[in-house]
Image 1 (tube, rainbow, N blue to C red):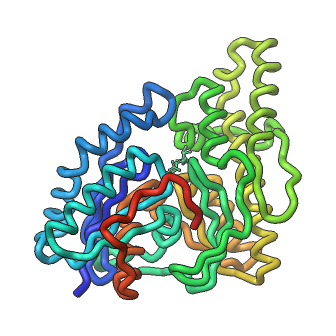
Image 2: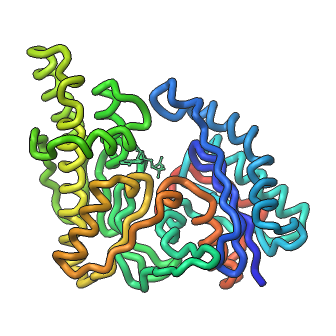
Image 3: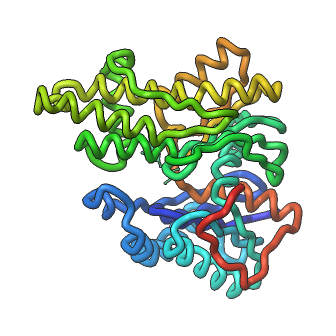
Length: 338
Ligand code: KG4
């Protein structure tokens, strides 16, 4: 029996999960609302909130799972990438916890975790997971990449953004419209009531499978400035159409490169992961591609789109089987690739 306690603290969610033999027993997350007032994550406030949350979150995860500390086989933790101050809280806690129990530690790459979220099994649920190799569109506030997944530990980035991430572009456009933070869920809600063809924004011309979103962000800002000059309440009058058109432009950009990569690589199993995979327009585009191109698509449950420790426990379980443990001195890393 392999029982993993996993800890995730890379950004502004403190999360702990318990997984036994690949089945998720608990996944507890404390989100930090303190950042809303600042329109973005404030690193120092995030670290402080992790300090406050980590002990109760781990305690709750163990209680909910009905697992005692002595039953744990290993402690898995997010080693990076992320905010250094946030990571240090989780990494240090994991080290202390593992050392006190005398169990091995397993380091997990946060991005690998997002992709492996597709393999999380819950008790009694009918589960469908991709088979290797598959393509995964990983889209979050910090990443937009197309990943060729050959196994849980063999992942190749075939395309990625050369500037902003898709989520970052959505958040910035939402901020420019004065709609609040994080912009993703707000834009998603408004877009459902708007006309996606109402406005046209610039789309990048980038070679290969790479993305770019900074031009779109600028184009959105310049258009908005012009329109607001003629109607100071332009955003209020047209926010649904603006949100729908922005969402459509971003989804079109994401899907075009993904379609090309899938075609060139001859892959029909296509997954999406990361915070932006919660977006309704993007989810619908995946379902539409399944019908039109015969793709078998994998869309995560909402709870596994944003940061969570369940996905870290999933990678932890695979690594435990391979006896892939890490030394006590392993430092956190702020930047790293898959
Ligand atoms: O993976 P994630 O939770 O963490 C970071 O990368 O920080 O992704 C967060 C991103 C934010 O940009 C947020 O606005 C976006 O995911 N997001 C969404 C939706 N929900 C969250 N974007 C579009 N539609 C959504 N429903």
